[in-house]
Length: 51
Image (cartoon, rainbow, N blue to C red; front, side, top):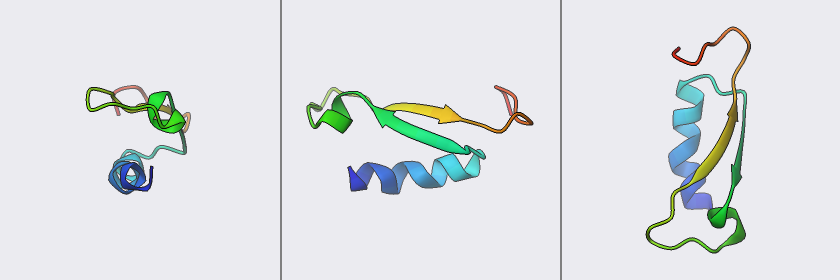
C-alpha cells in the first residue's frame, strides 16, 4: 500500500484534495495485475469538478 501512497499523494496535493480514502481490492490486499485503484476524494467547496 505504501507504494501506492507514494504515487498518489503528490497528485492529490497538486489538485488541492482535502481528504482522500482508498477502498476496494487494493485495501483488502486482493488486487490483481488487472485491478484499478479506487479513491474517494473530497475537495474544498471553492473547487469545482473541472478546477
